[in-house]
Image: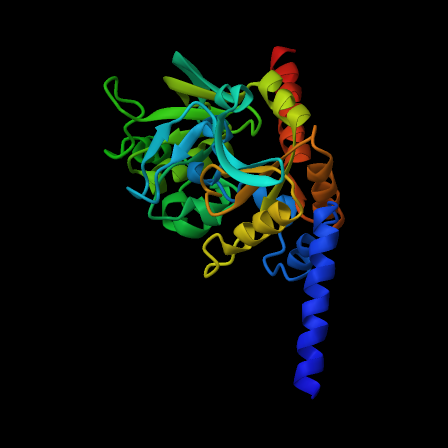
Length: 322
């Protein structure tokens, strides 16, 4: 008897949920948000440590990862968004080209860029794990203390002469990378991390300049495209646990569809490619109801974060100009 009553109650609850979904009330979405285990903070999108790969490659967000086919490979897809729309109450899967996303980022090359060794804030590779350290000085102190015992011009020259520090060679493939919203300059190196960090530390202790010249790749956000994207969509980020494999984001997307709301989705750029961006069209009333539920549930507001990156980039550009 109790089992029958429980089944009847569950059946009635489902009917009532369907009725509320039909009028655009985000009942199921609120439930998924309440059950969401991988609570992200906006700070989780920030780069960690002094390694290049930890800086999110937002300028490459128009590149679609082909991880389902060939791991690690990317293709330029001109800002394709995948999602669902509703016409006459019928859900259909759609793929659309988004101009704002296609023009989201930029990259330019500066040949013969000149800097001082102390201007380099991070590296791209190293057995000394630069990603574990906030600064290269901290890495030098912990990972190569024997190299920095002798604070002298002779030892500085010895460190710089190490064969794996290739940035001083005229035909090197090593180069510099800067993301304008981040501001830091990284050396994209193929080796020599210990000796470079030690040389940089010693130069700082001596107050001695070490000029370095090389190719600089400057990565930036197209501020106009970012603002256009934010004007068109409310955007949120759903993180994943190691075992969920996109399931948390998928459940939220299906809950959004259950209320008759259109949505689009896209994975974030590396190193956050396990996180799902949910894009909700501002022109749609039900999509905005879903956006309010996501914001009230503490889901990270990606649009606000991207606008903050643009603001940082513009501040950095203004500072550089002065």
